[in-house]
Image (tube, rainbow, N blue to C red; front, side, top):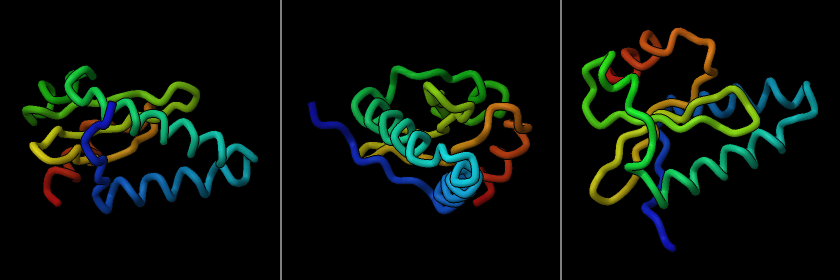
Amino acid sequence: MKGKPVVPRALASQDVEDAVSYYLGEQAALGFIDDLENAYTHISRHPASDMPRYAHELALPGLLYWPLKRYPYLVFYVERDEHVDVWRVLHGVRDIPGWLVESASH
């Protein structure tokens, strides 16, 4: 089953770079990348099946998120007609609403 292309925004790409830099020191960077790729594959194939919790809190219709399986990160995205727009890849203990409000302004 072919899915929609997953297109990370600049802030999402920076989030991933920051996480990989951290996990390099922990000897876990490859596992993080593998987990993220699995999440992107899921999102690509099933973009409407994920959780909308923060969409309601932030009044951002269509915003969904998918948690990584082995790492405490959440992938936030919006499904578009032609692709999946990844807004952020955030650690689950961060101030998620604050970080997403910053994303909405970019």
